[in-house]
Image (cartoon, rainbow, N blue to C red; front, top):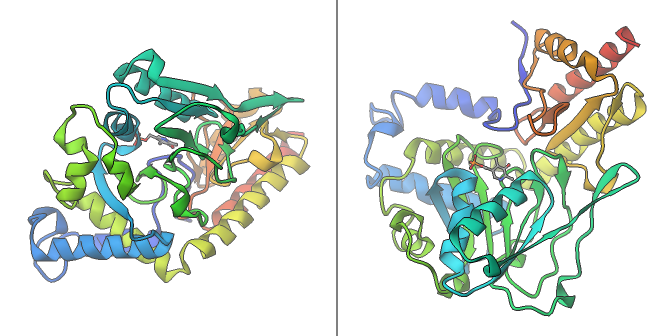
Length: 363
Ligand SMILES: *Cc1c(COP(=O)(O)O)cnc(C)c1O
């Protein structure tokens, strides 16, 4: 069987080398004769794993020492409520920038937890001549006192990415679920960064939180202990039993990234992959994409067949060619190729060849 390239948006493909190592270690990890899933999270071997994972992540992302790194339960969405519960208290206010499905879902969750007056939201996407583009507001011109401003730098469903870092008078809380470690960022510009693991890090269920220590002084609301950032810091993310296998796989993905040139090397290939795919879409009148070029996601490339009656045939033939999970999100339709760090350039080349061939056949 020839290689399968999996373009799923999440849970997404993981590096093959990591999966092969995990397979080998599944029943005997670290010479212990048992798997990493079957040992105490407080054993010295597991603690060593967590220390290594954090050290490698700190090195990959250049995380300053005044930031804590947490490995938490609940994926990306758990942080939608955690940031509200941890930072807003009874009367704090926050500003939410809305650029698509995920940032909008974060607003909906925030509204469930605190009063209407505590959450302001601002739509930052505009359709200009049929293309969606992000217009970042001048935050310094807004005369309000917010505890934080929340945004999502890559809208996984809509295929919209914001490459500029926000210039904000308030701490920036960022959902980087689908873009973390795909290119370098300056962590010191953020109050808190979070990411569900299943796009660029590891298996679902785990979320990574990177939080500046002064943020933990903000008044919080009564909440579940396992979702309290202060308690997580105090207990090294082990107030209760953490998702140990997910943590192990994440540590292996970090090691793989470090061994392959780190984030800047990934960014270079990610840029090439995205350019190849968007060039194919733009140069072939058979396909289209509705996002302005400077906001096109490098991780989730959305595109449509101009003749959408051929969608089913496209997906069927793609699958036969070993190119799987290209169906777009049900809300937006069309196609979506998610090309996170683990997707090799060869996978995108194969997709582009297929797309050109399909277009010729059906012209
Ligand atoms: C996938 C995703 C989420 C949700 O993650 P879950 O782990 O399913 O809760 C949130 N934000 C973004 C940007 C995502 O891509």
